[in-house]
Amino acid sequence: MLNIPTDLKMHFELLTDAFTQSDKVKKLTVKKCSKHYISNNICCFQGGLFPIYMNKEDRLLAYAEGLTILGLTNFHTNTVDIYIKPAQTSIIFTLSAEEAKKIIKEKNLYESIIYVLSNNIVEFFHTFEKTITSNNYSFIRILLMDLNQTSDAVKTSVTVASYIMKRSGLSRSYVMMVLSELRKGDYITMEDGKLISINSLPEKF
Image (tube, rainbow, N blue to C red; front, side, top):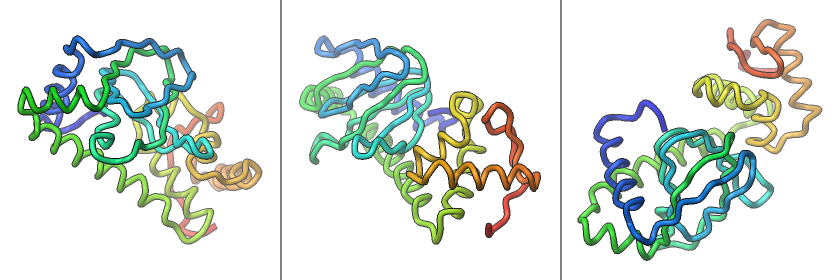
């Protein structure tokens, strides 16, 4: 999570510091492109790039980048079935939900939890909003604009076709056909399958 407001970053850091300093925390090394299931734990990432997937159908949900905390909804709800697949070998810190709840109570970090959870909910809403479209091309158009707004680290880590297919579940043949036509019309610029720029995108295809 990059370029976040100063107050939100402060609350992320307060929670991350409190969790990672616990004697119950586990420090894990997750190898590049290997799966790590969030299960019922709290997971803290202090840097790096982490694609987040739904376990069902292996659907790509989003990219977490930089300071991130996942699993906070495990306090009071059923476990969300997701996993991460880091773009590089990475260090993560995990803590049981019960232990995290104790730390929050002891250190009175309820305000920080509200800040971080509110941010995560908004991010989830924006992700869900992108899936509500009238047709397949509209979905591709939205995902292209979404990819174009991500950091260079995300854009250089994934091909445009792979990003769209993993996010949408659309067939490779259809995605490649649409991308080919958009390139022919100079609507998008790609190099080695990676997105360089978007000039403009037609509303309809």
